[in-house]
Length: 198
Image (cartoon, rainbow, N blue to C red; front, side, top):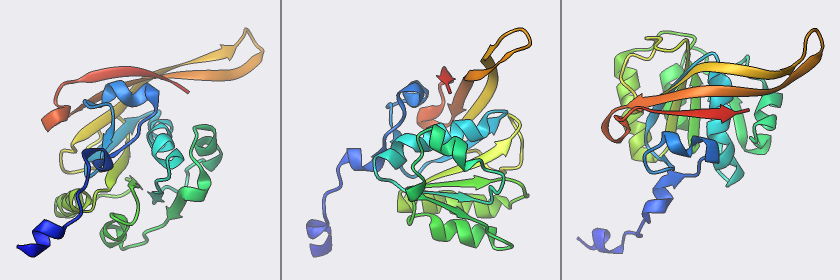
């Protein structure tokens, strides 16, 4: 068909988003592939989500945070997320429709999981993310929390952290080292682990 011959060529690198150097080891190709679903959980889920968003936003991508009212935007800025490329959205009672509308309009769509969602909606949103080339990220809370009813392409779990900077009775917290485990399906099936300095 003529349409197939005149369709613009899309380079493989255009199907990816950049990653912070500290996250590269968690991803098989060292880049964030468009169209995947990721769940992020553990006590450092928000910090990990900010680290995931920082490099794409710095390179010109947009991120939508959906149903994350407790999100600390000052912490996002400290992690390198430029607020000029961020939208914070409350979905109300139209969660699936809101997230579906954002997929394709934003490169990264990060959703809070303070509610139960239907497996059908999750599968449809995963398919839409693949079709539109967005990365869908669900922040789940505790590692292994079953609120996301379908297996994601990749699960990032903030498995533990260490703080430094406090002396005996004085000082302030300066750094946090977050241990992150990554495992999933398909090309993400090999478990990986990295330490993230925040």
